[in-house]
Image (tube, rainbow, N blue to C red; front, side, top):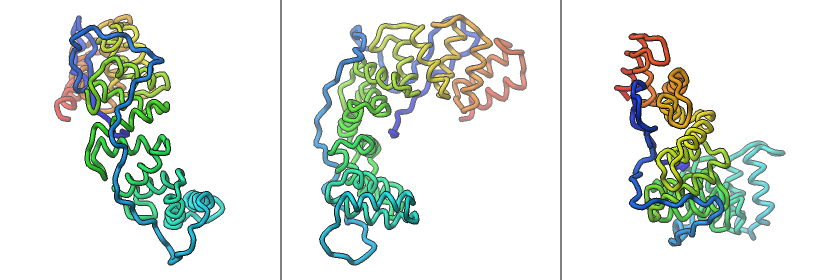
Length: 322
């Protein structure tokens, strides 16, 4: 999601001697039956809602009064790109939109995608989410993966189209099955919470694993959560910590906080209070409230760090005031 689902871990005190890393995915509840491990090669069947975005075709941007036979679509699209990027011609978004507007109605997928992004961002044309979604839909129907993701985001948020979680899931899964890591993480969220598709922890784990294998930090964090709690996979604290470590190394604050909790408790890693403080510090620097709370308690109790009442008060105040 780009459009994305909010996650948040419960705050843990560093002084706790037992416990588990907190599971942050919103909407997760324990499954009623023991789930089967995710099959990394399996393909989930996509839902099949109507794939249309809107029936209203926007007018093509025009910078002249020409009503002659439409130009060659490939040439017009290439001219649009030249004007858009300023390659061989002065950069001119209005002219780029004009040429893309001549090629897009003829089915040129590049022109459709670029014209959609220009309507989305207001480049060379007035910003118009509905027009953007129309052209994203045309390109998505031709298999353009970025357009499929953008269209899914539009349906998930209701930006330019009526909010429709079923259609959002449809397009996320299309892009996910074509290999897009962000879409794989997004459809994983959908299966996790049952948003637009039936809730299925096994399928969620499958798609999180596919995205994590491509280095998506959000999916690495989510997969760590799944291993931590045994959702869709066998419970494994070591695997949880390993995936959180990968995500934390890319700067994911939630993963840094979770890894701090793991080191504080010795869950999947050797217990090490100073390493826990290190990860909480990294997460707290990104305004992660759970980490701020844990770090404040660490300074308050002198656990893994020299006791410092002033720093304890600082971090606890931040945690208490989002």
